[in-house]
Length: 301
Image (cartoon, rainbow, N blue to C red; front, side, top):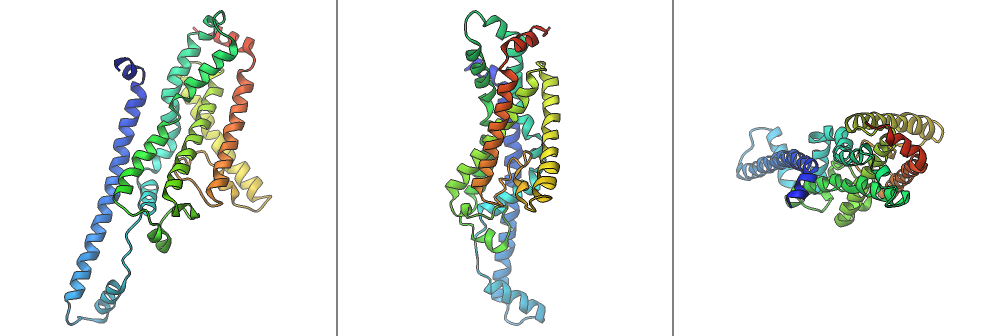
């Protein structure tokens, strides 16, 4: 147990810190919603007790309050508020949440020339499999944090999306909101696909830069560059400019927690799966030449 904690101390600290951030965001939103409900209930009671109205404005207000159909606020409404108002800055560091603990282990393997020492004991293919296994070790972290963020909202709201639909308050418009279990599963799969893309970006950088801090910094710069390329070239120039479509909105690797279902969840997952496969193909090409890789590792001091 002690050994496990020591080898995973960074990711454990990350989970603790961001769990606190997310729980605090949930608490603020739930507390605010309870205040709104309390105010509404007090207004209803007040209107019921009024025998004679002071003016037409008060009469109209009470008429609306008393005739209004009470619909319990739903998970999709409050979760959208958490994402849009309280944790929006986390979108920009989600990449680092996955990459920092991952690259600490991957760069250690590369920096200390494990490939050279393993030549006599295992094949290069086996070494790469172990390297990938290490790199994928923390792709579940963002999914876990997402679940941690969802649970308090679920426990304090309805899973019936009627409120979000009537008031247009939720981020999601497709029919998946009528199926909460499918929504959560799709959401977690989508976040995990993003995490795999992040790992592949960092592995491409680690092929040339095996020192942890420079690797993380360069990976983050490359990540931002890819996002700018997707937003400008792919979305604006190609998809909107040539095909006159907004499909390019789902080509976004910063909107980790949003799950843009503008064209349905299926197309979004398919696009992200394709990006996973393309980025994995680039990683394969970068690492397939054993001789060049060994020479690069020999340069490490």
